[in-house]
Length: 107
Image 1 (cartoon, rainbow, N blue to C red):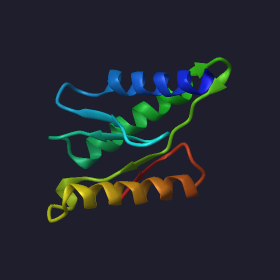
Image 2 (cartoon, one colour):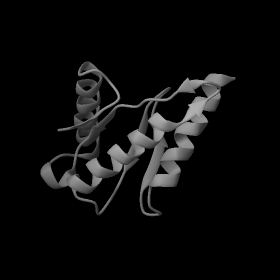
Image 3 (cartoon, rainbow, N blue to C red):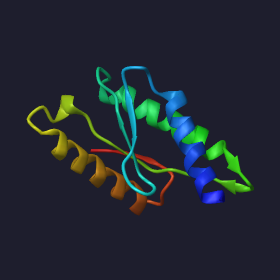
């Protein structure tokens, strides 16, 4: 169905934009987790913004795709566990959504 096509398109755009050393994981119904080792936070923000723009340009059966990204960095939170980093990124995502969606927010 159309919802499945949107998810597949979203996933393909992510896979096309990450490096072989990165991980793109479907993390929930409509959430994806992207892990980018060896990238500083500025590179990650730039990459998230590039993906957001590409998703915005996609069209699936007449439906425009938009995405909000919550971003964080181990480099800025070196004492945090992976679970804590995911929670921080999730908080950034909720901030992005509350600011009007279709944006990249960093914490």
